[in-house]
Length: 211
Ligand code: ADP
Ligand code: MG
Image (cartoon, rainbow, N blue to C red; front, top):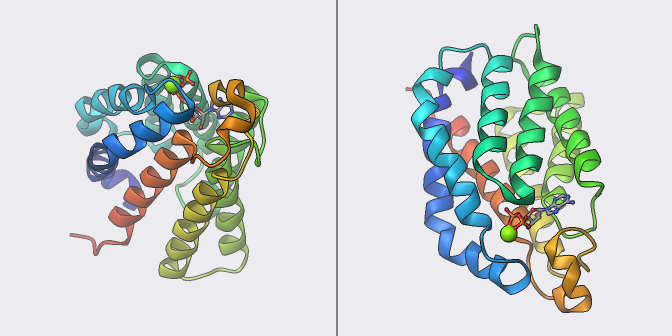
């Protein structure tokens, strides 16, 4: 499958994207968190970098499972179990199904629902869900409307960026930022930002002309 065959490039692109923005996102997390989000995430991405050639030969459900388990065991922090839950749940939804837009969209939606349950959070609470939920919605709409891929990619990127920006004016009610109450206002959430950056990196690879 197209996505699986590009797994090494996807992991490299995500890793490079986070590396490039590491300082800026760490500053966001220092403002309203404990400043470790990027370091946590980079630990997971480094582990995935070492696994990228093994992942490419796996069925997408098995690859998602492995990615989720790696993230859970290496990232740590709140985001480790949440990103891990996203992938492990997607893996379960993907089991014995071909990788196509319908199955990917359904798997992603189930993954995002599991993140909500795990974090006892929803959209509007200044977390990664403010990016993940709108992206799941846009994917679903694009699938229903059979939108062409370039349009879908553009809409997903747009929804993710809008989601990140929206966190600035939200009051944090979950995670460490919630300890600051009103003082969390005016700052973008770091986990929303890394989610958007990772999605943008994936789209960069998928929209590039196949080699
Ligand atoms: P920690 O807060 O434990 O130090 P990280 O710094 O790795 O963990 O991750 C913080 C990010 O995790 C936040 O920016 C936010 O996006 C996300 N997050 C925290 N708590 C929740 C939650 N309950 N639901 C969804 N996302 C959350
Ligand atoms: Mg932190």
